[in-house]
Amino acid sequence: MRVWLLWGLLLGSAEVLAQACVVESQGAGVQVKVCQQNRSIPATMFREGFCAPQLKGQQVTVSFVEQCPIGAFGICRDAQVAGTLYRQDVHYYGVASDARLLKPACERQYRGVWTAY
Image (cartoon, rainbow, N blue to C red):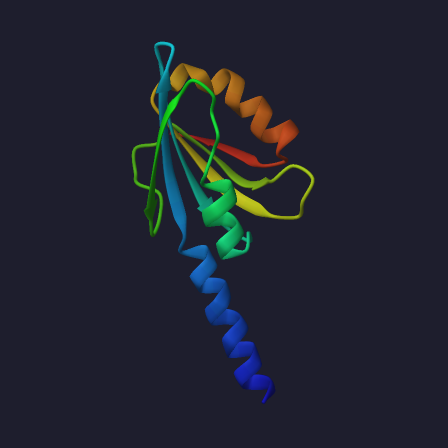
């Protein structure tokens, strides 16, 4: 029985890990593209909360994918979601010079590890 329980937990974890969303927004002359790769957020919460941003005055498109696409200029790995124990990897696309603001936020605010590409 314990083996089946452990196997179920492992399969459930793998399902959560293979979940990502690409969020693209534009408005006021600014375009943003990020991809959030789930690490430990419950699947429903990730899909309905974390991948459903409400950005006033912005046109937002969300696409669900198995994993984040290549081409990010930087990734905040193992970022902790504010006020929770949940973790995710946030991939940033677009203007690489934005890293000067994103790296400190990743490391200080989200307690993640910044990787530049």
